[in-house]
Each structure stands twice: as C-alpha cells, then as structure tokens.
Image 1 (tube, rainbow, N blue to C red):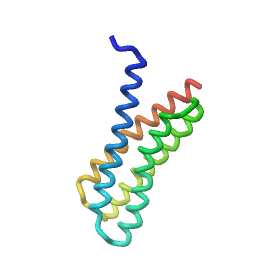
Image 2: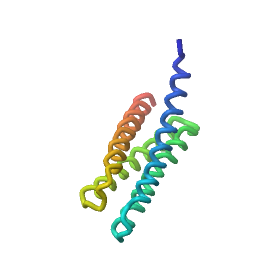
Image 3: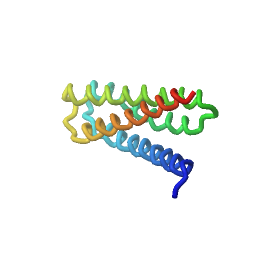
Image 4: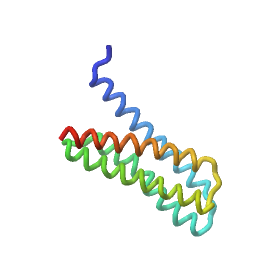
Length: 126
C-alpha cells in the first residue's frame, strides 16, 4: 500500500509536469496567432500569464514554509485566472478560431480549480 508521502510527491510531480506541458502548448498556440496588432498585444499578455503558471507552481514546490507556499500558490491562481481571461478575449473577439484555444481554456480552468482547492486546503491547515 502506498503511503501518503509517496502519493503527495506523485501529485506534485504530476502537477509540475501538467503545468509545464500547458506552458509548452501555450507557446505553440501563441505562435499560431495571426500577426495583427491586437493579436500581438493580447498574445503577449497571454504568454506572460500562462508561463507564470508553470514557473510559480514550480517555485511554490520549493517553498520553505506553509506561508510561502500559500503565497506562491496564490500567484499561480491569479495567473491561471488571467490566462483564462486572455484566452476568452482571444476567442470572443474572434482573433482566433483555433480549436486549440478552447482546449487550452479547458485545461487552464482545470488547473485553476486544482490550485484554488490546494490553496484553500493550505489555508485551512495553517
């Protein structure tokens, strides 16, 4: 039977990989955007926030305290929500009709839900 430490490490590793894959998919999507001025402006905002999700989750995993972990996780939640916002704008403004936009939106919303729940769990265990 697996112990809870092994399960926790597996979950952390899985989330690190998931956020990294998300960033790589976000880069591919960004590269496919039209070369219009509005796509460039919104695309840059999207790239900043989406790459921050993976980077800050990784930093959270290296936290030295629960307070630091909570703080970094809060940044991940904010950046994931911002990423969802920019994807919604790109889709609703019809800047892209790329089906990958909807896949990315679904994935970032799932990541956002996971991170928000993790942050709430940490908050309850302070």
